[in-house]
Amino acid sequence: MNLAQAKIAVKTWKNNQQCVVFTNGCFDILHLGHIDYLEKAKLKGDKLIIGLNSDNSVKKLKGNQRPINSIIARSRMLAAIQFVDLVIEFDEDTPLMLIENLLPDVLVKGGDYTKQNIVGANSVLTTGGSVEVIEFTDGYSTTKLINQLKN
Image 1 (cartoon, rainbow, N blue to C red):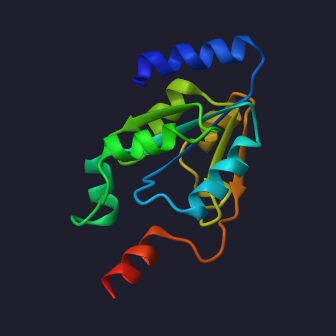
Image 2 (cartoon, rainbow, N blue to C red):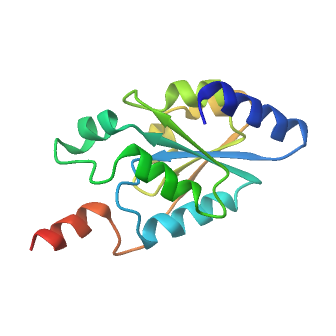
């Protein structure tokens, strides 16, 4: 969805008293760690939104060899997961603009973050929402998979 469509969806969900959860990431090579994380994120509310880094944004974060999968492939894979309700691309360095526009009830990030350094936390907290950190499933990472393939 684009931002205008996402805002309408969020408004509808909130009007129906549904709790909206937001997380973000590159999700370049989907693996079990991602699935576990997203499933745990969905348990925090009724609707799960994924802010997905654009191809340009992934390159800035991960280097010129990434992403492995294009934005189209990554967004379609994520949208096919039964507990994902909305996928929206962002091209900025962070998802702050999305978070400030959508104002989810719950903002979720992975265990490599603390609540103090999660982008958009203040925006969510000042509107009465919560910020949650979910621990990663040990042994799974896209970088690890890529390095295993190289070897």
